[in-house]
Image (cartoon, rainbow, N blue to C red; front, side, top):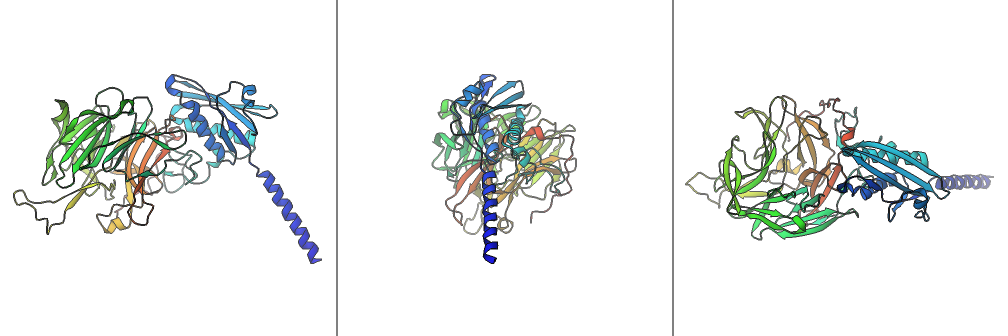
Length: 542
C-alpha cells in the first residue's frame, strides 16, 4: 500500500513538472532592423531601436536573434523566420522632437499583429518599453517588460520612503541585470581612469568616449556588440601626470576638442595640452601652455569658456582665474574673473535660478560652499563631503621666504575636483548639480585613503536654505572616477555616464576601469510632483 502511494505521488510530481516545463518553454523570434523615416542623422535608430527592444523582450524569457536587413511587409519578414516562432519588423518616424514607432509581427502560420506608440525623442526608452509590453502580453501571453518594471527597485532613488515612483528612470528595476537596457556597462579597460568625457570628438555627429589615464588619452566608441572599440590613443607626456580633462569646441569646427591639464610630479608645475580628434586623428589645436586650464560655463550666457590660472610654489594655485585668449599659437591669460577666495579653474560652477544665480565651490576638504549675489556672499556650506577623486598633487605648505623642510614636514595633497555638472534635466526650469558622493569607512579615518569601494551620484538643488537632494543613484560598486551627462550609446536618450575604477585583487594593485551608463527617461518626470525631502537631511560625514 505504501509503495502504491509513493508511486502515485511520483507520477503526479512528474506530471506537474512536465506541465511546468511545457508552460515555461520560451518563445523565440527574429528581430529585423527598422526602417527609419527621418533625416540622415537619425539613421542609427534602424539598429538602436531593435537593440533596445531585444533587451526588453529577453527580460520576459523570450529568446531572439537579430535579422540581416529590414522588411517592408509580412511576406518579406516571413522569409527570415527560420526556426523561430515570430518575425518582428517595424518603422521609426521622427517629426521634430517627437517620434512614432510601429512594431509588427508575423508567425509561421501567417498571423500578423501590429502596434503603434508615440512619444518624445527624449523618452524613446519609454516608447520602446510600451511596445515591448504590448507584444509580450498580447502575443506571447506573458507579463511584459512594462509590467515587470512596476515591481522591484530602481537604481535612481527620488525619496527613500518608497511612497513615490522612481525619478527619471522607471526601467532601473533589475539591479545587476544589463539585459533590460536600463544600465549599460562596458568591458573592463586596462589601467586606472583619471578623467572621462563623452562628446562628438571626430565630427561624425555621434558621441565618443574619451578616457584619460595617468599618461595616456584613449578615445572609444560604443559598438553594436555592446563593447567599447578603440578609435585612437596618444601619450600626453611621459614625464608629467595627467590631472584633469574637459571638452570644448576650441576652433569652432563642430567637433569637441580636449583640454588636458597635467603637472610635474616633483614641482607640480602645470602644463596644459589641447587636442582635437577630427577624422579619428589626434592633432594639436594649440601648443601647450604653462598654466592650469579648464572649461567653465560662465554667466550670463553660460557658454563654455576656456579659463586658466598660474602656478604658485607655496599655494599651488596662483591668485586669480582668467579667461584665456589665443596668442602666437597657444593660450595666454586674459581678463580676470571675479571669484571668492579659494576658487580655482577646476572647483567652481554656477547654478542658474529665477531669484539669482548661486556659485558653487568645492573646497580643499571637499565640502560644497554656496555663494550668492554680486558680492559673492557665502550663504551655505555642506557638512557632507563630495567628489572623491583619487588623482592629486602633493605639495608642501610653508611661509614665503622661509622655505620647506621636507625631512620633517608632511606634504599636503590637493585632489582633483570631479566635474561639477549643472543641468536642467527634462527642461523643467529647475537646475540640479550632479556630483559624486564617495562612501568608505576607511576614508573616514584615513584622510589620504582614496580607494572608495562604492559611491552615489547625487542631484542637488538650491531650496532657498541649502543644497537639498532631488534624487540619487543607488550605491555604485567601485570607486567613481568621473561623471558626465551625454548620449553614451547614441540611441537618442540622455545618459548619466559614470566612470569607475576597480581592482580584481583584494588590494589596490592592478587597477582597471569600467564605464557605466544609466539612460535617463525624462518622459517619466512629473515636474508638478514635489520631491519628498524628509529622508534627506544633510548629516555629518563621520
